[in-house]
Length: 142
Image 1 (spheres, rainbow, N blue to C red):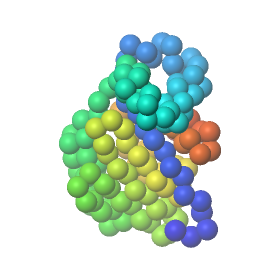
Image 2: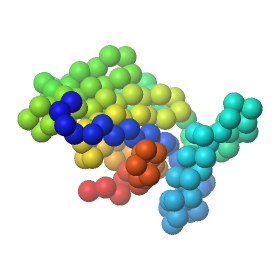
Image 3: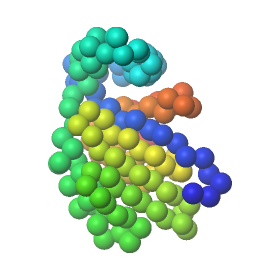
């Protein structure tokens, strides 16, 4: 993976009913997800309830199919089940996109991953990098 640091982005599909509250102050949304990820097992039921209020399920079959169809002709792309891999040694990008029912995870060496460019077309996706305290609405990136 070269000398570039791997970043770990978690992408959440935010409930439309919460957009007015969270678009203006996304730090609150980031802090909520960060707090949920650090809860103890004894608080798991409450965490799931809060998470289900904030997010909507991800249609992993549909999104995975769309990603596949979009990148299939790119020789740097490969796929296994719901995991999509992009390795471009000329651009120094190594990315792994894993699509789950509750979130999408992107492990990448690029801050502008090729997968961001595709996923930004979907509305209400919120991205968190908990390690680097970085967060943004995916549709807002250029």
